[in-house]
Length: 185
View 1 (cartoon, helix red, strand yellow):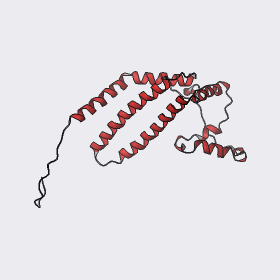
View 2 (spheres, helix red, strand yellow; view 1 turned 90 degrees about the vertical axis):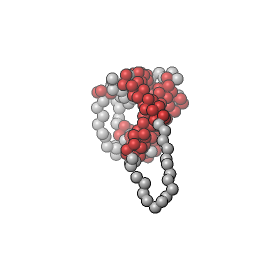
View 3 (tube, helix red, strand yellow; view 1 turned 30 degrees about the horizontal axis):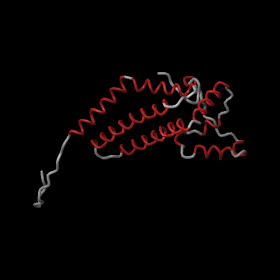
View 4 (cartoon, one colour; view 1 turned 45 degrees about the vertical axis):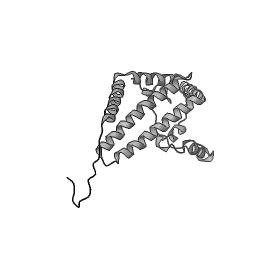
């Protein structure tokens, strides 16, 4: 599968060097503007992208086309919802790691897998329901279609569904015996 980037026309040849904040950013208050833009998104390390002065016309047009698609409210909401979901997955994975009981962890991983599948499908449907014009978003949609149609994903989806059905069939009961001052074995 071809590597895809919404920032670079050819993601395989992406050569992005971490650039320090230019000195003039402070003088022009651009540091405050960028800080406001990336506020709450520190985990993505977006600042460096604003420091890079892009002189490649093809690259600029590629990004502008994508940003034009983002002006469509449904596209923006779909992308925003998906990115929030990915952040939620990272937080949930951290919480699952801290659970004490292995079976509880496994059940949480299963629930997370089901949510992941549904969100991927919702994300794709959200993007397919609008007419995107940019090459970048069209390629993104095609990659998601390809991913969701692979045998691996279909098998993953079937296995998680079967596991959930099997878990629903399990019945258990708790027997409470009158306390007679001794431990139950």
